[in-house]
Length: 180
Length: 175
Image (cartoon, rainbow over all chains, first blue to last red; front, side):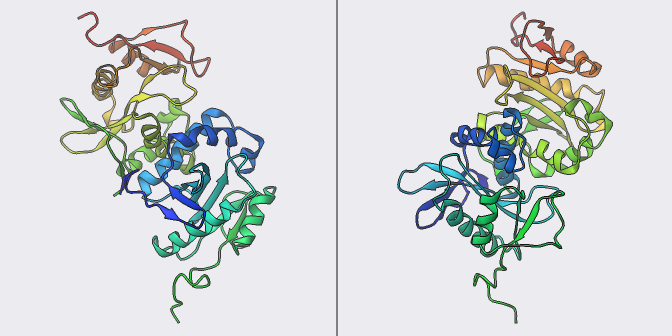
């Protein structure tokens, strides 16, 4: 695939998921350099935020999948980044999400994450998926639960203290038929 | 294999310069695990090394330009990284370089790659100035900057107060 031309566009009821671009940098910077950035496990200097944002795009370029920018169909406005995340050194394939400041609380991340997970299971062929969430990030923990993910105490930890939420299997979600 | 669309390739006598790709990761990973990486942010975990490598193409996508890996024309082997660098907190546009393979040190490859990248920055990207930020203990890079004709600019702002700033002459300016 060529980035950004060949990045698939996913469509949900209210959203379009597209390739992240430089237009998303100001919102990413604002989020990551705010206190909420810390809850996302990221350092919050601007220089680290730039590197991390460039890495979101690098994930697509190098692996052919990655986090989409989530856009509202009605306004076109970008509300966050959601999608596959499995950089070198990650214990397992993750579905990650972040919502820009001011766009929280409307179910966009839920809607996008469900679509991204279906893509990971259906198109990328993942057998399982996790989401790594800081213990103090109540909003993300609630979203993981709403997606049907449950804490897996036996999973390899990302780092001490971070919780591993394991998503329902593709079979349980009816995305793939069980082998039995 | 996935790649970033629309990036240029530069050619020199012995080298090909192109945007980084996943095939370069192994060489970069090995470099980052050595003492030689101390001037590029220090020896890191594999994940931290990946963050360093993986974001270079993101810089390309965000800025429309970025650093090139330079490869041996004859063998295709990845030897190092050189070229334009301008993350959001940099005071001005930089030409950076690092040699990733021990055996590629001391053969003038970084000089050849940096010279091509500087010409590209001025002639194709239309830069009107370029600097290199160098750790004062990095004698090899200081020697390379001087060989490229760059001179110390003591007054220029810098990302890290301990860095030296070398300013490159515009190619052909005093020819």
